[in-house]
View 1 (tube, one colour):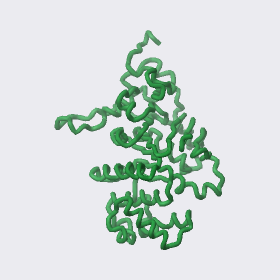
View 2 (spheres, rainbow, N blue to C red; view 1 turned 45 degrees about the horizontal axis):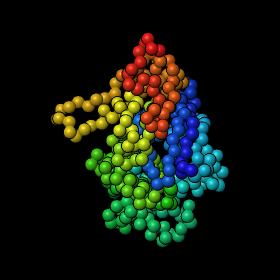
View 3 (cartoon, rainbow, N blue to C red; view 1 turned 45 degrees about the vertical axis):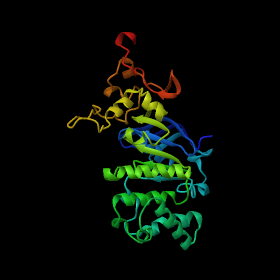
View 4 (cartoon, rainbow, N blue to C red; view 1 turned 135 degrees about the vertical axis):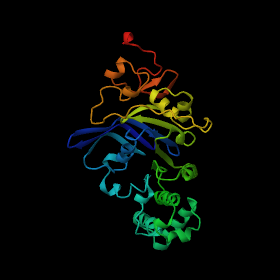
Length: 329
């Protein structure tokens, strides 16, 4: 049994101008100790997907489908179980550490309060554990940092503190939602390498959210590519990079900067804009931006289907290789 299994997940927001179909028919699973990358542009539904799992969506959201953690229904937890589920079994690291940390509380207070609440630790035991966590996430002079405020730390150190807070109660599943977005590019790799190392050392499952396929290439076991609230392609990381099928996935790959490019080489952006999610999907959401678009793409919604060469490699595209034409429809 997978540690996390999501089936037919859909999230719709009620707004004054009508429903917004933020996520539709999303399926994936994560085994214990494995890493899953969820990749896509802003607005593709990545964050809404994981926030639905963490019970962080507003009351205007309607969630259907199912999500199970180690066989436990995450959408129908008893209040007594929910109280010690989030932050214990499953934890999350958010994009911006400054919005995750309280600016008027010392680092030590913020690190220990969750442990004391969930695990009923004494003040001294919680402090000892907090210092261990700061060392684990490679923050030097942990005793000094324990007594400091968030503004006294660099952006990279603040994100390391947030990671330490997420690990405080030994979760089996960690969700990292674009954890390096607010950081300088020089420290992004260090944070990503830290997460990957901790995942391996602690035998912890990791769901890594990003807009950059390059980030997940060497740090995940499987990849789900999302666009317009839907899964466009799903495969093992090695398979997806060896045989990228969906035109959107290929476009994401082409947009990754390559250090071997000659100076002055222009990047290859994806033309157009993401779809309006206030319109119920009735055709391929990527059709207006796709180089392989054909008549069927504009009037029918492709479902995920296995590749003929690999049944575990799924993609949702009528015309991945540009071979159809008007007469063949």
